[in-house]
Image: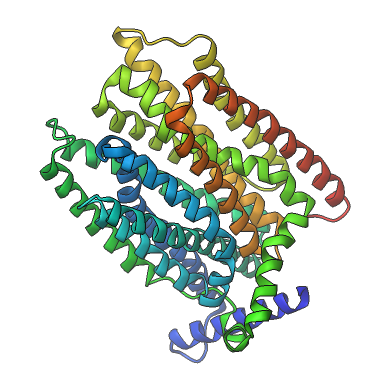
Length: 455
């Protein structure tokens, strides 16, 4: 497998060089000029990708936050989110094959369609529109996320190779930019829903209809942006083989791509942390907004506190990405983020009670800020860690990331109506202990193995 991968890469780089040389017209091309075009191409793609995700998810994220309060009939909102994340979990197992077959750019474009349909279904929310839309979004989401991880990592690797830079640093920086811009979606999207629903039009159709139409326009813009990305895969060589491959061969390779990462000790040690990162996100969406924010600040306060959460998430993602250079820095940054979240869960479990006055408003906002910091850390560092550790099966590794994340999110959405906040907090604290233990063991293990040869 490995030599073949390198072969793809070189082939890929050469092709790009030629096309760039061709674009810059004169036959005698200044090498410095060419490399600056190269650099701007790579960074341009990172910004296009990040902006496209921002436009799509500011709409989807805010719509998701409203599901449980708008579509209350027979728990349609929470049930359709549970269905969505279950479907997402299942399809993430197949996603790496689809991404390999389509190439990460086309997988990204196809992935946007699911989000568009889901928001459109919210214009007329019934079981007949929401359930099929949720099922399809599970498929689309698995493709868009595996595509994103693969695309960003291959862009970072090519950039590092061209400029003879340390791969881990570039992967960290690119992930910091992406997740920093991505986290702004909570901030922007919730401010839009706060503005359009402000005059108490929380459940009224006119307010939400206008909101969803604005969201659909934002998503369409995101999809259009994706089309401007450059192709970054070694697709040219893989295409014909994979299309003529027999069903049997593709099933075997599917099983391999699902099972191989699970036979890798590193993946097994990262999985608890991946699952925990899903748990803490769902905890914020399902429990924190319901039990902590709404009683203290009212329904309209959900938008405000989630905007604080998003802002801290974004700032922290950018900072964490800048500080990432290799395993040691990842270990330190993750420890800080996990500690911030553990403090919140212990505070809620042991001491917290809703108070009146200024503190009553400040406490939920402070919690939202710390939870956002933890989320920013986990997003950037998990993606950088997988990009650094799994060089030869990037799609498979990012698919595992989404399988375990979405499975744990689905569990929270299905459990949420039947479980108390206390029980949920105990689950979160247990999750922290197990996942952080596994993660520390991994960094010690990998540091030991790699101390002789550099990462």
